[in-house]
Amino acid sequence: MHPLLFFETPWLKEHHLVVVSYSWFIMAMLALFSFLATRRMNIIPGRFQNVMEAVVGGLDGFLTETMGPEGKKFFPLIATLGLYILSANLLGIIPGFESPTANLNTTVSMAVVVFVMTHVVGIRTHGFRYVKQFMGPVWWLTPLIMPIEIISHLSRPLSLSVRLFGNIMGEDIVLAVVLMLVPFLVPLPVFVLMIFTSVIQTLVFMLLTMMYIAGALQEAH
Image (cartoon, rainbow, N blue to C red):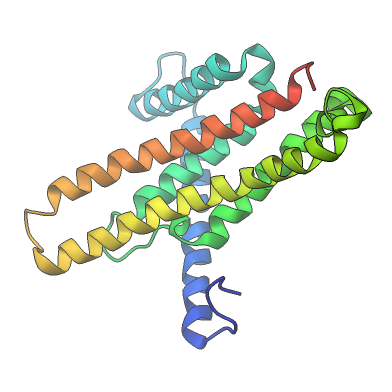
């Protein structure tokens, strides 16, 4: 159900279907590009292989610099989120399309995956000791520290989802207004700004995800 309505309308159901269709379209395109890039791997890469290797290499370098060598095992998750979010953000720039990340259901679903993954990693790494972070350094501070820690952790998926949703939704609204008022050359600077913001929001989501998982891996927990 849409968070702002108490009942589903036919228009709202159709809107959700459109958003899901765009998400499947992006996933199909990413799968196709991956297949084309790996179908004929050459020692001397062609243009398309060069581009894909640069993208994967950039993501790998970003991950290693942020999380260190032990973050390599999380590359599939981080890279998948990054490629999907960037593609979804940029899709809304094309007239007639809508960014799936401009829908709160999409951003919340990704934020919940990150939230669950963070605590799964923490428990698998530290066992029961991971729970001690919610209890504070001494037992008599537990009633004070535990609510603060719980609220802090629950705010993470809220922050991830609402930040991405709000920025991309705002971009789409601004673009729609500008195209209605001045539908020719004037919107070009807006397109450039939207591309820049789409990249920044992707990097922010990836960076926060890596920081949360890296925090769960730390021995201090």
